[in-house]
Length: 439
Image (cartoon, rainbow, N blue to C red):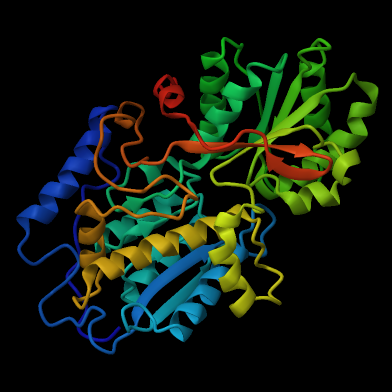
């Protein structure tokens, strides 16, 4: 966009710590008061074009690519394909969509650089992105009043920042939903997760589901997220879960993102010396391509439970997304319709488009996009999620997640080498999350 640099919003410093649940309530309430009390602020100064007329609507999508840990190249690749498709079909209310992409590199320095670039380029939103480094990027977005729409849900800050508009329940819902299911079928449970700040929250959520099903907590095993093999971790996990019974075998739950397949290579070699142990995990750590590469029906995932945020990739509700891929990115191998990162990006851009549509012929700025979302806009995603609406609620504020508006997950299983629905419809994890011990 063109025009003068806009005056930016100012939010409470993230270093201010308020006890939960008061902290979550204060942050959300403070943001509403700040925007209501400023006649001009919250992202725009009179005279700035802000996406009106012939100016393109500028947004950014970032994700890590080419790193030694979790990579999400399909997210920015799909964002660019989506922009080509939108612009070939009339744009957003006649406006061209310009998508900036940024390699977040899985480090805090790069995450901050991506956010600063979004501010410099006058992006009106960051859409469908992945980063574990919310402490590095959120201060820049908050200072500029730029909304973060449809992040991957890998950090707690995505469910606390008043500028965050999540479309799924992130890792908390996946682990809580998985734990509740495993409680009925598993003996001892071992969780293998990254030794990172983001990874530190995973045991709490898995255990919330396990205890809701009257099961003992899991054993928590930390592992480097960029390791090249996990033999020691696999052996430890097998030793801790080998005491299961024929009806309730021990369960190993790897949640290592891209390194889950590396762990499973070590697990397959190590498990020969132990009784059969079941495996279970979450989407994002495994997808159909990982199942195929690990042996399909004869591989270690056969029979495993997998929780996801959305319906299985073969569900007809994904046809609109697949049409975009077919028309604009058919030969781009980075874009897989079964990748949860790609799916999240599709839903995030659907939300952004709904917000722009709600503005009609008005200015499209960071402020007006936020205002549309904050004014009770209801977004239908064609059944891929429940109807989304972002408003402050006490329901999950008590555990520090006041922005979590979609706590639904799907339960899937690997059957004859294919990832299929284990149950129809969604499972609401709200009540399970409410019991999580986050202190």
